[in-house]
Length: 54
Image 1 (cartoon, helix red, strand yellow):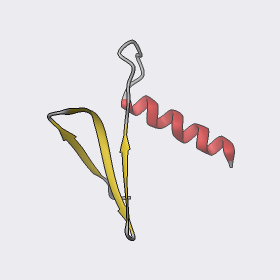
Image 2 (image 1 turned 90 degrees about the vertical axis):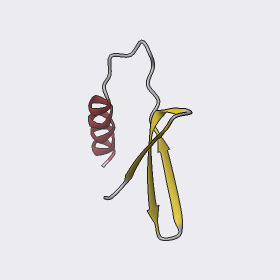
Image 3 (image 1 turned 90 degrees about the horizontal axis):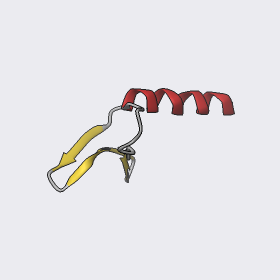
Image 4 (image 1 turned 45 degrees about the horizontal axis):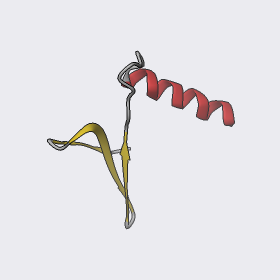
C-alpha cells in the first residue's frame, strides 16, 4: 500500500491520502491529549481487532 502522509499548518492531526481507481480516501488520525497510546500502538490495536474479525 502506498499512502501519502499530509500535514498542513492549519491541520495538526496526521492525515493519510490514498487514491484507488478514481476514489481518493483521506484518513485523519485523532489522539486524545490524555491518552498514552502512540500511533504505532493504535495501528497494532486496529490490526489485532481486524484479525479477530476473520
